[in-house]
Image (cartoon, rainbow, N blue to C red):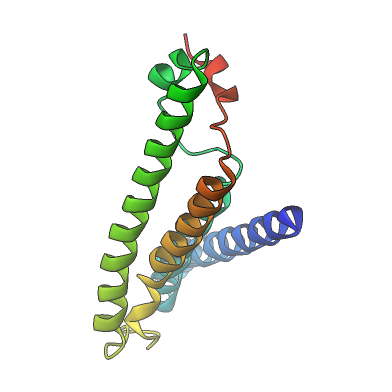
Length: 161
């Protein structure tokens, strides 16, 4: 199941990136080559970029690709109870950050429901919506990790000097 979701997220990221490249490249060619442009490409590429960032953040969480400071927690590896407590504190902080991000994003979604973008006319609520979905998804993953008592993955600590 995780592989299916990961592949789906990667496919959506690739589609967003491809559409952004086409929009921006096409607009650059039109502006410099033909002294014209398509105004909608700027709005569309901004919307796709926001969605791509939050979709990427959501896809990066379960595989441990977010930035982590594991120096302190890594020293607790030999003390299982302290390591478990530090893991719980970290997951609770992630959960709290998700609640704060989700609450703020929800407020922006509600405000944006009545507004529409200037050129394309899509509801402005589509801009903060990926932040809301990302916070809910990462929050649920953190809750599952807390419930299952999943230990922190310190495998990336090898990259540090």
